[in-house]
Image 1: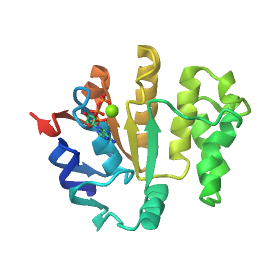
Image 2: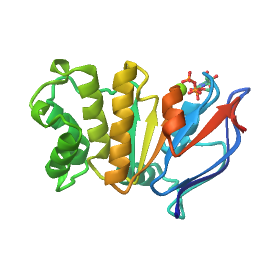
Image 3: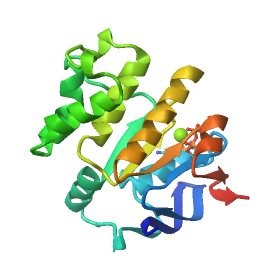
Length: 217
Ligand SMILES: Nc1ncnc2c1ncn2[C@@H]1O[C@H](COP(=O)(O)OP(=O)(O)OP(=O)(O)O)[C@@H](O)[C@H]1O
Ligand SMILES: [Mg+2]
């Protein structure tokens, strides 16, 4: 498998606090990678850096063999094309229907097949008949599926997820894991997920443990 994402010796401090200490990581195309670790160990910080949402103090990042762009305009474009994000709280727009929420990033990005992609994922995730509803009329699990569909609609190569199951019960969390697996299998997609779930950590292709800003054996 070719390496999709490569991070080398990533360090990051906030003032005196060194949050990441020369963290290196390779994610092959198509991998489902889980990252675990105690609260404050640097997981979200690392994910934000991998996603180009935050910058490292030192270290190198490359995607498909190309260094990450440095200008903010270019990094925005890279992020919008190649990456998808799912967070713990899904931040759906309450005034817009499920379909509109899923399509919004694609519309903003001028994507031509956005509705077709939205319907494809809605069908795959079993929410095709819920698309006309506002988020407030959907269950938590349905809202989470809308958020995952929204993250996939522009066909990213890498999905970054920060505790996406954090506010779901264990059955809903298991369903979400299956959905992400399904998405990974149906699309040309790698997934890096930060999780506190033992089950997710056990079922991912690979799991890495972050402790105090460095990988732990
Ligand atoms: N913008 C910031 N300014 C200052 N300190 C920060 C900032 N962001 C994170 N930190 C600190 O960096 C450390 C790592 O934070 P991070 O959010 O990466 O942890 P985490 O592993 O995701 O934890 P959790 O499991 O609780 O989400 C914490 O001590 C946090 O307080
Ligand atoms: Mg976090």
